[in-house]
Image (spheres, helix red, strand yellow):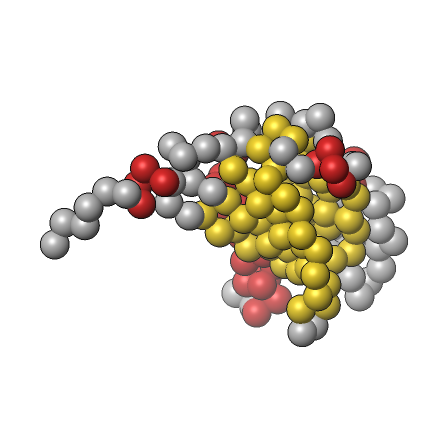
Length: 147
């Protein structure tokens, strides 16, 4: 297997894993969305919270190509009806119909990932990198360590 094929599979596999991790976050709330800059580009962090019985989740996206959010005030504390992560391959491979037109595609565009959160307010981000962080729930964190 060549390096290019391995790299393509790696990004697609990361998207599938992230989608699996985020699937139970339906019914969570978007606690906040933060924008910033990192050494090699811009970033957005989406903080999700359900309550003390479920773990908090932070979705970090870097090297942004498209960002669309609803009213910034409405996004905060907006509950999640649907959350998805999609793999967007390089040319010549097709993109899902609803991703076409979000950004201009070219031969030098890398593989991308798309995060969509739907609810009363929406978040739609296309980026080169996605990382999902999961914290222990408050209940898990309060359990004694067994040594």
